Image (cartoon, rainbow, N blue to C red; front, side, top):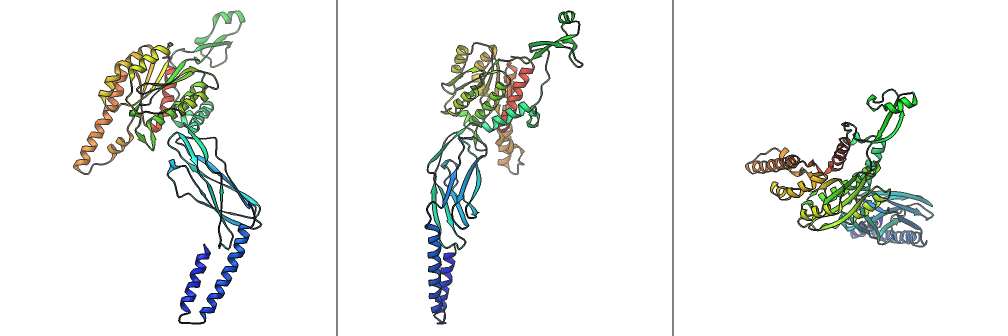
Length: 433
């Protein structure tokens, strides 16, 4: 601020006036000039009422683990151009206290800027004041404006990721993100209609009775089986508390469930949801209504992890009692030791007898980094050996599940959604459900 620089110059003038007396009256003239300029600058800034207006245009909700845009609009009603410094009071969850943005506004104009925030936990986020500090080109006085106190926004599971995969599914560009087409085995599809044969149709689908009646070659047309019940089962116990890239395994599973459920609904299947830890927390029956994805979103938002030990006995009893039709069960969980898997294996095998069970396990990417890092000392060799053993145990657990007829997905947290949808497409293509 120029006021302090001007005062510093005046102090230097009075200092030199001790040796050169001519600087003494010059210093007083500078004080008088500075006082007049400060008075004019202050009147210009403080006299108009509501000369500056601003609005923080928060969206209705934020998407967890994604970059969310916060636009701010500023209107200058002054008769002269000003410089504005915006300091927004960001929610405490972000632990960000150094945000500021400087803009220049001409007279009677409007400007808009935006910044991005990436939340990593669900819940309510409260914004404080939007503080604007305005000054003229003289930069001698500063006026503070305060707008929009205590705005609140809810952070939901990643609906941005959900929309991205839904758009790609419609646009047939899933392969760009690692989603792959699965070769169909046999005709595991529902009959749709009889149509005239055209070049390229499978001759094995010719309907000879319809051909004889119509006098032209007619073929049966099939479509993917629809309205198949699919349940996402989320383990909300302490094994899902482990964080990667600031996000817990539980939130990775929640984001993936939302995106996958939306894709399954668009393909005509029924989707449901079940969460558990030491008790059954949520049970949402499978449905294919268009509004069902909103219900799933609200249930996922409200999941309150207790981080206690999971009870697979209760899970098996709940599934046996309430899911009576053969369904695809996607179980998001994590086992860090083979003994932990062995304790729950009888329940998993029992679930797999009646349903198609897919157990989704997480790779420990931090261990992967440790394995890839060269070892330069004896302790580092020990650490690397233990990391390799833990990584190997994960693969053994996946093999153990597959040996018992349980489908398995072992994936990095960041690849969870892609690999889950790939598994779903594979099961649909092979008619396993």
